[in-house]
Length: 126
Image (tube, rainbow, N blue to C red):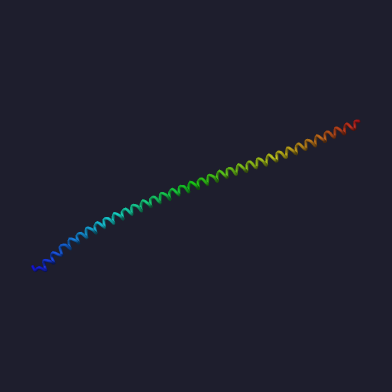
């Protein structure tokens, strides 16, 4: 084997060694990347879950608010009904008061008429 061939052989060996190193470095980088991707994926998943939970909470709050508003409206309607009933009662009381006044007037007029009649009779007798 000539010297040139020996040198060539010696040069090829370190190159193969370095290729092996490069390969393991690539594997390390690959597994590191894979690890980072997994972490990123996990974080994204957690964030999605948190966002979803927040949305659910917001929905629940909105539903609660709607229910509260509904109850308030019902209460308002009940109050409105009570108010109307009170107004009707007031109107009835006013009507009764007017009728009572009219009855009193009629009674007074009847009394006056009776007194007048008695007066007239007394005058006739004199």
